[in-house]
Length: 331
Length: 266
Ligand SMILES: Cc1cc2nc3c(=O)[nH]c(=O)nc-3n(C[C@H](O)[C@H](O)[C@H](O)COP(=O)(O)OP(=O)(O)OC[C@H]3O[C@@H](n4cnc5c(N)ncnc54)[C@H](O)[C@@H]3O)c2cc1C
Ligand SMILES: Nc1ncnc2c1ncn2[C@@H]1O[C@H](COP(=O)(O)O)[C@@H](O)[C@H]1O
Image (cartoon, rainbow over the protein chains, first blue to last red):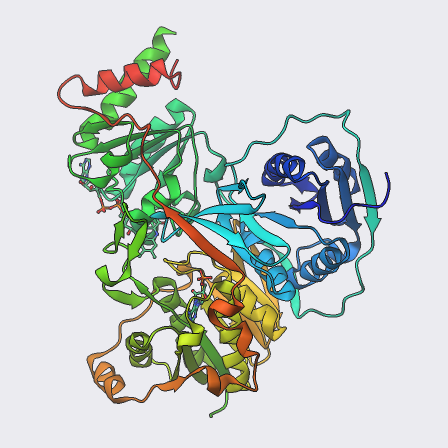
């Protein structure tokens, strides 16, 4: 391949222990579509150590060119080092659009890069489009999910973090060809940061769950969560909760759904004894099917539910469990 | 200024999200419809600073950029234990996106001069980006740790913190630095009545754009310094939701039928 044409679309490939975060494949899918519309190349940038093997994977998912920085210095995520590398690469290649997954890592890294380049950054986008003027439009929820804002950026590159599981990756195509460009990070002195290790790994990954059975303050005792666990496991899902249950120490924050917890997008979300506050809805609004079980017909959760049962969860949930068990026995 | 950590806490006044009204027809947010409060996560940031002050000594400056009424959030912060409060207010600051906001805050921090630690909330309930903190750190060329949910130890030259990135990491950071904290780090205390009364009379320093000249470029403030523009607001639609409510004795059976039909069961 010849010299890279300027102004490509660039996707940041997030990895941990050499495993690419799936949001990066989703961004390559979206990036491919945008690059084709803009008639430019799709680039990806991968930072880490012993990650060389994954560069090809990024090509299989749609990248034309992968800028690879494989260096012991980049083994653990140091936001200042990673920022230096990306700022250097962006200055050199001048992409017109730079996309990063809106993961905790992405949301910590992207603003530093944007500020260093004095460019605009849009957080947590749920869509990116090209309008009829050929301009990039970034679409994101704001005000705790109460509004959806359409945003344009007047500086270059346009930068956005993009929510996990809203865009579709292309199917992996191992015959796709592209170029891996080996790069070397600048030598960086002490950044002031030292990652000493992982303290704990999350107990459940709600963001990836297909079925979630959630409980809220309608539950009277901590033990009653077991009922929801049973329902969840019969459905092949996991348990989520509203924030008060986490605040009361009933269950770890890994299970919290909402504005200050996890944003989830399961195929099925069953809310039991949850009123549907804006902060809760902000985290589960995009679930494919929403079922609400609440004793109060006027609870806001019913406004976004596909199916609802107005009733006492202490009657409804055990009967649901019974019905599911019966069905399992029949099979 | 006494010995110990000099901490700067960045707080924003926001509308109470539960009460704010949205004009769906005109695509407008009616900010005057809701009472104002301090961004809830920023109270965790302030509490973090006060606890550090109690542990190892120090001095807490709160800074907020916003309209004149943000004064009340700063008074509340003084009542909760902050020592000094600065309000950045000027028409020139208005219309700022996160880049311009962070630049303005960083410029004010340069004017404040020496500091050891800047503490921000995880995100605001209105802007909802979590970008301002890391951007301030970049403008000031200091390291940052985001999503801090625990401080394991603190000295005058470094912190040992747990950063909640989904999985949790132990990170040591040399000061001066910036951290953004999650709500899990602490439970903010309430101000005592005595301190509320005292804070009512306290003086809040008000800085305008001119007073920052010499510490930054005026053209990077407010609308002029903003690179992003919101050109349209729409409301998330619940169209397509069935909204089928089942009542009565066979509600569970009906729901089970639906779940079977959609292949969640069996
Ligand atoms: C900055 C900020 C961030 C926040 N982040 C989050 C977040 O991430 N996630 C989150 O969930 N919340 C969050 N909150 C809290 C949020 O505002 C609500 O307080 C919370 O979501 C309410 O939880 P709930 O629905 O379980 O409780 P409630 O609002 O008390 O509702 C309980 C519901 O249970 C029903 N009920 C009672 N008994 C029964 C029964 N026997 N059978 C059936 N139904 C019954 C009631 O009718 C009621 O509707 C946040 C708040 C703030 C200020
Ligand atoms: N106008 C402001 N004045 C002071 N601090 C702010 C302001 N805006 C944001 N912050 C700080 O930056 C954090 C993240 O804000 P945001 O990027 O808007 O989500 C907040 O929790 C505050 O600590």
